Image 1: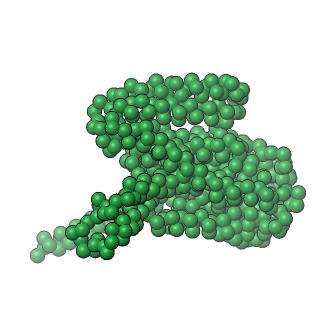
Image 2: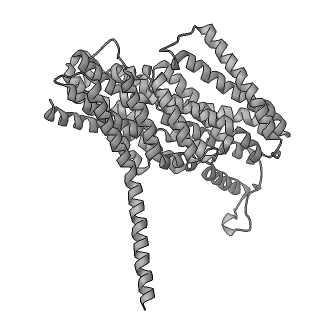
Image 3: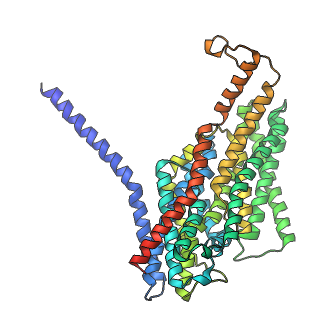
Length: 499
């Protein structure tokens, strides 16, 4: 009798240990995040000059760090999701690569978009410096809260939407509708519509090129030996030109001929490196699409790294753009109209916060984006990553805060819808689809046309999950007004407490 009782007691102890371990793991992420926010506050208190409003910089540093954590947790999923969903990268490898390149992009190339978010959205002559600081703090806190909520419920929303909506809402609450630079808002809103379309179109075009040049050929291995190195060369050339013109602009500003020469040189270097690598890999694979797709793993990893760099350059503005405006305004005593000084320590908080948020809270949304919208292999994921990277890089170069979420998800849908179109075209004209399961009574049809229509509907469900189109679109639509209303309420509260 004692033995069963002892076994039950041991099971209870074991269950308690497991529960304690799970609880500790669940609390580890928030605990590390809290340590980071405290470190940001301490750092800001040492860096900022003493003054009657210096405490506002410390508070703003904590809010900016909180926003950076949410940017990493939510937005970066759109960059690494395709690589993880296609099994080209493990989750750990994706987190390491994304964290490194996100931080590098934020520190090296994050300046232009910061100016657009923090300064160009508002007409500063209508506000004094203290009110402008409260507007920026309210915008940061409201957008961070909204993105945090979206991350908890598993919705990949745009942090750019959130921060722009926050600036608009707090600005209207402080000085009315005339305080907002509506033409700039209109330009940004247009880019939100155009960017997912461009991402989808570019991805579909790239996938079509790969199909024509490689996967639709009889000898796919020989074709891949020629074209995969060319795609790698294109990617390395574009990345080199971007670094020369934007990423290293603080220490080096080459002229256009030199930039073009660098692009061609690095493209040639990428081709030289990829040629023997692809040839060596092709010796051990079969002439099948599944095996050919494995040749795109290395280009996909490079494309994912490129996209992470671009995202860090573009979306660090969502965390430190308003914060940089707060620091500059407190230091000068008024809202700057000519431009913003961007101290390295400000960008560093954004870069570390994004990387840390990705590592602590990003895996859930990475899996959702990479696996639950459409089925991705290495080729499709490569098309998504490269097309999204090129679009985000162009937007960052223009200083336009487009949504990387829209671009990446648009590229995923573009690949999925292209596959649907190809599947339907291949079935067109067939009296009875080859995949029709006539042994299943549910599949019997009155006419061949009915069979074809049902098969097309099934193909759509298999290739792109329609429910995600509606849910993601709803999240995109509600983000701006929700963050605007929340920012207005936060501003009124801050104005009562601080103002």
